[in-house]
Length: 255
Image (cartoon, rainbow, N blue to C red; front, side, top):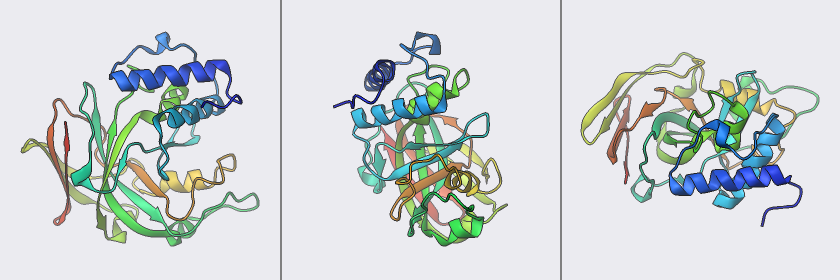
């Protein structure tokens, strides 16, 4: 049940976004039933949408608004076994290859001091190769309204966690060859590179956001840290194979 603390406009938008996702249908930003005007408004819509979808695994993506505000959204559905992944292909779906970290310590909100990068590193027990599928019921994604895109869970429509990686992949400036095949055809072959050159940038910034919910960055949480290959449109369903470096491989399918 939708809690009454959400406004009628927030509830209506959450239901609309949920319906668009179920139907695999996209509409222009201007056809949304309401428009989140502030990030807090968007976060509330996102919470309601996540409840409607049953997103309850402590797995998250971190990003940044055009104004520099750290943002987060739940990963759903989340698969830690690629062979069991069930994600439907749809027109305009995109693939982002990322590294995800698993926390072994809580990172509670700090009111008196900031987390340094070394504090975040110390809280990480494992690093994984991962694939995020991105698609939004909003036709323009976040290009017109970042707040609306944040409400739509930053476009996340699924995440597949692959093999564990060496912790060295988190070092700033690290570069590894990345190759992606769709139905045995190469669709990407270049160096893997995080947009900020440091995979932990957005996680560090979000950890230091004093307005974030205190329950998000807990031990056992999975946080994916940003694309290493941009957003690749997947033009048709089929088998995807990802290789990072020489030995780390992730295989799954879009049906």
